[in-house]
Amino acid sequence: MLQKHDIAAAANALEVALDSGVKDSDSILASYYRLTNKVQQLQPMQFTNPYIKVPSFKTDNSRYDSLFGKEVSQ
Image (cartoon, rainbow, N blue to C red; front, side):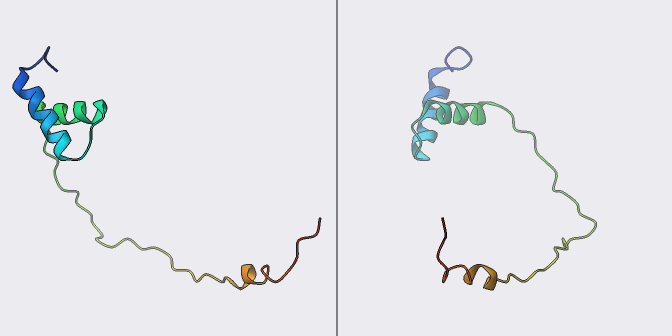
């Protein structure tokens, strides 16, 4: 981190990571990259159909319930 930015950027990344409750080096480095790199603004996704059609189904647990009263043969 210090090769690319000053100690203030590294300290800020460490502070943000610790405030988030993480202490591992990968999380600290991820905080550093998030704070020092420009983030590309994403446009909201546009859907032609706002509703996703999911087929409905009904679960029948009676097949499994019938197994509880039986012994397993070896």
